Image 1 (cartoon, one colour):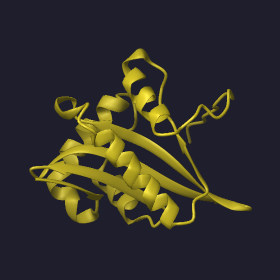
Image 2 (cartoon, helix red, strand yellow):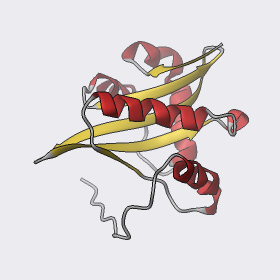
Image 3 (cartoon, one colour):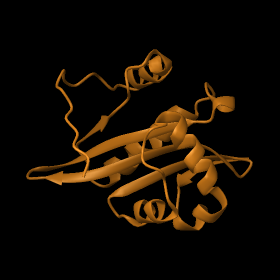
Image 4 (cartoon, one colour):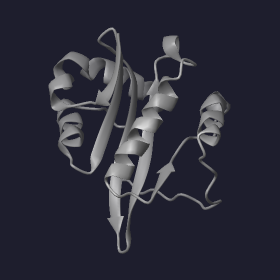
Length: 146
């Protein structure tokens, strides 16, 4: 049995280790996901943590964050990860469709999706293009750790 829904604070005790493992495959050098950080994200009204379960096992995740600027609401999709053993089965597309629908319900006018450019992510890039995403700009992303 499969289900696709928002990941909630009630899911954390049973699934935090799998969540961490999935996220590490995407970003091995990122800050660790703590119970506190995952709880904050799950409780944030401007964040949707999408989760795909197969036989009660967490096998896919995606995050939508909504930000308001002066004249519009924008969506930012990050952390789209599917477990190796189920890749290619449509879970990534289902997760993105889920967060896009959530964005529309909340009045978001456009969504930005970030994905690194390493060759290992070529399949993800093809999926995003097939779903109607386009490379928006050729700008440089600056980041400052705080």
